[in-house]
Image (cartoon, rainbow, N blue to C red; front, side):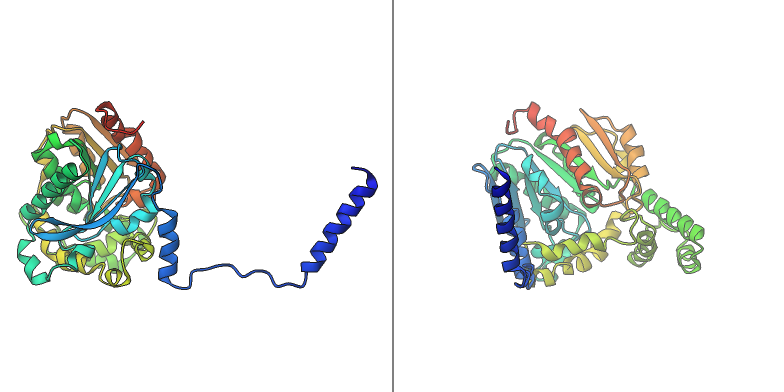
Length: 376
């Protein structure tokens, strides 16, 4: 291009710019309400691969209808069933943000348990209350695993238990190891009373270092907290958790787990009405089920007949990760792995989602690949 041609092109560009100089800049397109916002999320995470699966439905488990979500890019991949904690702290509404990557390597099943999330809204509380026992909750997991294996045509699956769900998950793994490629424990419950004692001590130490007289006073009033033979009451647990959260025992470097729970507001898995009642099950079930957990000591079992994977937050004092690691060191299993999350407490799937995905892919998926249960 000669000099004259370049000059003419440059002049034309200046003229075009001048023609638009007085026009207002386009307004950014922002969602006007929750419906528009979740439509964006739903479209972005839609499963579009030819062999993918994307289902949300009610399943009859334990005599009642319970909600499940099944999502994955390839049906040939292994199944990962998530047993959430709480009791009643559902994981499905956060999965749009922290779990999309999982669906590339697993068919992921999220499930709102009895008295939790959307499931809680299906059945009257007075009907459910008498059924909230450890054995019934474990039986629900057993039924759900059996349903998933049959429905998705899998001989074995991965079972991931978080927090309270780690108690249910580990018990299921002990009873039915032949159903599982591996059991994955996150915030793993073992010697529950010892975990509570250490969590209380660590929180009191943090409050003393901080010079927080109110926290020290309230925590010392609980002593002897979780003393042998004297499990804490729900009121004592709540009083301890108030300050444990404040000092990073639930989410490292944060004062509570609100930044985890708030993700539910943009979940396409819940209607506005379901979202308004999302935590009613948590409020209902926790005072019934959590005190029952305080009497459990899973650390007495030193063998597991399926592979064991623990994903532990270094700062977790909610379900004390040091107690879980001490138990892990003694367990005999066909395969074992422990991954520490150095910048997490009780919620590593949200606090370090990238590393969490890598742990699932590197530590769990090879068991399925070896069994021929994974897409190429």
